[in-house]
Length: 113
Length: 114
Image (cartoon, rainbow over all chains, first blue to last red; front, side, top):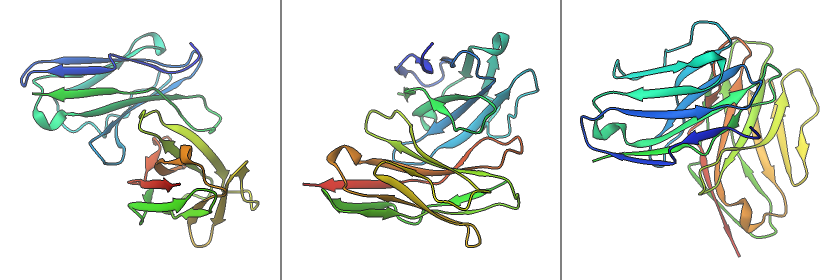
């Protein structure tokens, strides 16, 4: 597509439930990134996929968080047993290898009640 | 890994005036790229400007320009002729091309007053 698409745009879930957030990157972009942005805060790196290489999971805050990228395209971020502190905007971005920066999606606002 | 510091949580500028947002970074790499991103209330991150570390010339994009001081590891953003639509969070970021994801500063909230 023309841009990075994220769904859903907003998600409200009950504490303890699992959620899945989806990211559809720009076609042809080999790299895909997930960031978390808490209210009024900066961007916290979560995970990075590059082509067929093993993902860099160094930013995942706990083992309740996982992500996969199927066929080198669409990615799903899964949060199990959600907690209130997981409430944030989850941003996905993709890039090519030319260091021209990332293209971001509009994010998913997750609210855990 | 690199660190990026934005020391101004908030800045304010009057319409048509000029404002400068500060950013410093720390990296041991010699080849890297620096970026400024804008995040309006819509929360869409938009790339404003990009600088390659090996280039001495400061990047410019219309009303946006940078002051890149490589020795001081400083990368400030100047917005000229500020417009109401420039109001947003601005994030500085560094990419060392070493296989790590972009590292962002904590952001500067820019308020533009009429």
